Structures are given as structure tokens and as C-alpha cells.
Image 1 (cartoon, helix red, strand yellow):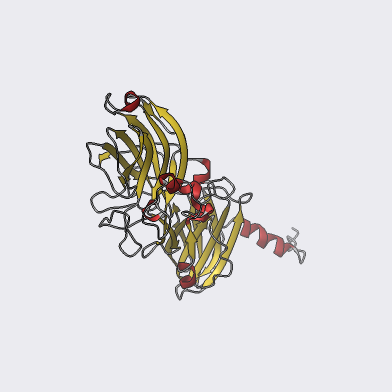
Image 2 (cartoon, rainbow, N blue to C red):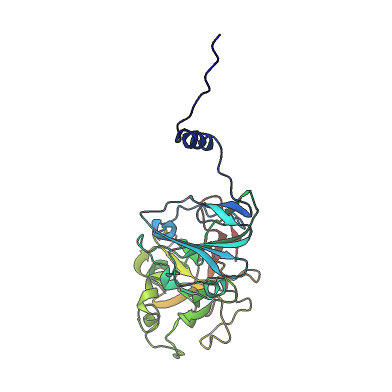
Length: 367
């Protein structure tokens, strides 16, 4: 009987066998390292019921996504920037090998260029402006999400970063004419404009502290207590810089007969949060005294121009980030002689629906 001959292997065969075996097993991090998966689902908020309207495309557009990873000592260890052609939400980023430890992750959409930011402290102090929230698909609104995560040796950790907008949205859904029949023109009215006053202009990316800067404070030009041309309150560039005018103003000329209702097609206005809890009214409102943000309708009623302010402050809560305030108004009489001076309920009935800025159901509450 012949002996079986010993099988011989070519030198490269061992390498091929090793590669084949590796292909059948999952990747394992080296000792002292772990893996991390980051998931960015998109914008959203779970703190309130959601608005039931479909958002404008520019409100959800993501034209640039920046991802920053910081070590527990606050120093940056990775930065990634993706343009609109490279990112769609939900977005997933994987780190197959990271040193074990604590990390902090930030996802910023449509914000300022952050490539030079190398510390978490510098990121938190980066200023954002309401003007950065452009009303076009090519700009979009500044959004951010952040999360801490613990990476453990030999394990895969996951961090979810839902982003939310820094701005708040205010929308007029309907204006009803309930003027007395004995008014001029048989109780008909002309809606001349809708705008925000006492809006907030700037904030920082940490979302802490109070947003700074006032836009259209008191509904008048800076340092001007009153005006003989009241239309100046909604038309002068000196009052509000051009970069913010589309965020705050709609100039109209809509005739509304008695008992008719008008539904503005695009009456959405924007401001950063306003945490003023004690309101201050009148022409002497100052940045020091503070004032609640107001939605104001300017209308010709009974032969004269009047303002109808709706104060966006309820139970000590003003405008909050990533929320929608939907407003219905019923005008019942002549209004206020000052856009920063609210009127009695007998003259204006207003209802506010304050919800999260996403699709879903909404709730209403009277002012």
C-alpha cells in the first residue's frame, strides 16, 4: 500500500485562506477601541404636539450638513462637511475605529462655516443670525442636534441626533371681519399689512442664554417714539434691515366685506425665541425693558388706519425655538393707535395654536 503524500501549499495559498476566513467574520476593533454609528433622522421636536400644516420647502431644506466630533476634553477630533448633492436625511455616519472614551457630537445644517472651530467651547459661542435662515430652498433654516456618547472597547455604540430649528414660526391662518354694520363703508375693511414686532435677531449655537438684538422694536424706527405716517411702520428699510424684511413683513391690499373671512396664502413670519415673561407695551419699549413678540395686522377700519396686535405670550411662555404659532383673528371694532399696545378682547378676538414645527396634530388655546 502506498503512503499518502503530504499536501504541499504554495506560499500565497496561506494568504488567500486568511483573507477568505476574514471575509466570513465581522470587523472587530483593536484592543482599546470601539465603533460608533451616528444617525441624523432630520428636524423635529418631541416636546409638543406637532403642527398640522405642510412646511414650506425652504423650512426643511438641508443644503449643507456639518458634523463635528469632540473628545471629552472639548477638543475636536473629526470634522465632516457635506453639500446638498452629498446628503439626504436620514443620514448615517460610521466610525469603525475610535478610541474608547466619551465623545460629544454636533450636527449643524445650513449654518455658518465651522471648519475653523477646533474646540467645543468655540462652537457653542458661534453666533447665528435670523438672516441665516433664508426663505429660499438654496439657503434653508439653521438647525442643530447634539448628543453625548460613550464608546466602549470592542463594542459598537450608536448616537441619534435629531436636529431642530433655532427659529420660531408665526402664521396667520385667517382674519374675519365682524365689524358693526353702522361703520363706514357698511362695515367693510381693507387689510394693509401683517408683520411682527419685537422680534429677536441673533443667538449662539449652544442655544443657551437669551437671544440678543431686537428687530422692529415697538413697531417703529429706532429712537422714534411716534410717526405722523403710520404706514412707515411697515415700509421703511431704516426700521428693519433688508435682510430681515421677508421674515417680518407682508404688505397687502385686501378688501374684506363685513362677515367675510380672508385666509392669507403665505403669511408666515419668523423670529428667534423671545423669553420675555413680563410684557412691556407702548412707544417707550426699549431693549432694556424688553417686550413680548407680537403679530400685528394693520387695517383701514371705519375710515382710519388701526393696528391689531396679538401678543405671543401665554402663561409666561413666549416664542420658543422650532415651534409654530398659528393665529386666527376676528376684528370686531376699531383697533389700537399704537402697534405695540394690545386692544381689548371686545375689539379683537384672537386664538393661538402653539405646536411643534412638524406635521401632525395641533391643539388650540384662546389668548
